[in-house]
Figure 1: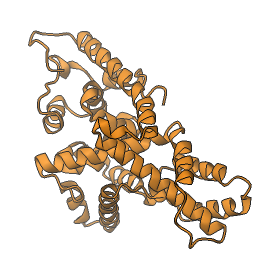
Figure 2: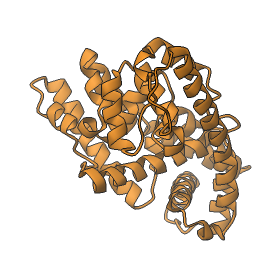
Figure 3: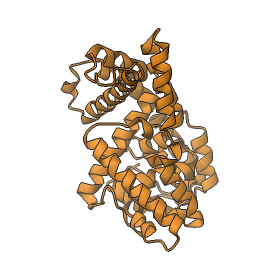
Figure 4: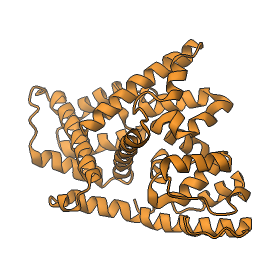
Length: 319
């Protein structure tokens, strides 16, 4: 998106350019899971020099350990927390093979990478953004308490990412269910321990109190002011990504991928579909990808047209 001429261009031509780039982005996305699965299965992955691989592996191992902890407690041996590496590896293999689990953990690693990059380049606090600070100071006690809860949750996310951990309570509901099924499969004939472990996991789970749930509720409560969350320097990485997903009708994990350098068309279309004006989109690109310019004629592209192009995207094929 950096090599366009300044000549006048029709909205159809702009759409065609973005559609082609979106298709290229789809093809790149289609390679993500197979490559990640290969690297996670390969102990020599360090030759790739990729911190993302290490972080994904760390979070997967942490989820497996938590599931084994719950099985041990359910079986009456809760004091035995030194799990066999083979048992951890078996559970990780089951989770990696799930259609959405690997892509979600990968998205979390990318979100943290972006958070660190913006902190280093723009001094954007990874926990307390200007928007969250304003919401904490809201005269509405419900808004203020929700913002305080998110502040604590975001602080835990930062701490967990630095430790390469992923608490079960922070998983989306469908992925928690997938984790429970993987645990039951690993338990084999020990049905009593598996049932007790599942009951304990589900009893302590409340998706509305997760970081994603708290962000979504705050953004929904902002009403027409939710556009403020589409400024990454104002809202912070976490709220920006959630607002982008909600505004463009995409899955949050896909919204994380849209911030990647290989998905520039997807980011531009998502921001436009969410209702952001071209000038504001340029501001977001300056924060995220300062070397990139929007194609000439992009201002002619309406939000409905952008949403339609996104809807035709073969998003995350083969995961």
